[in-house]
Length: 64
Image 1 (cartoon, helix red, strand yellow):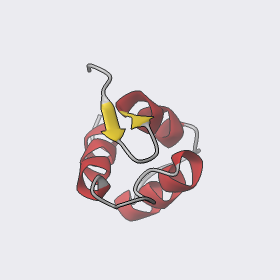
Image 2 (tube, rainbow, N blue to C red):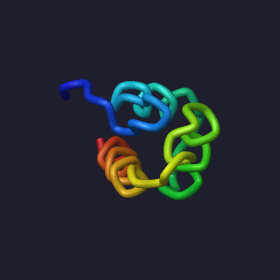
Image 3 (cartoon, rainbow, N blue to C red):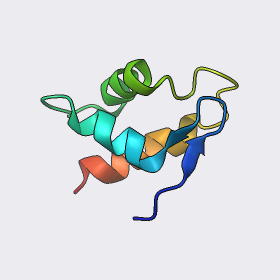
Image 4 (cartoon, rainbow, N blue to C red):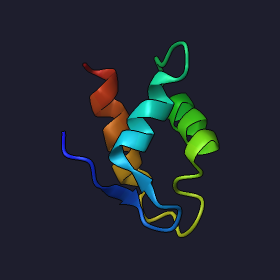
């Protein structure tokens, strides 16, 4: 997957999100995983416009 900026406010990339997701032992719930990723990267804490993009990335990664 091509790396691109997902969260413009906090300058968080696609790869940053995937790396933060895999830093946790398990991820079986999308919203819990989102919370963990958000704590690590600060994504979606500015304007919140990337919220659905981040959820989509987490969902896709969890299905792999």
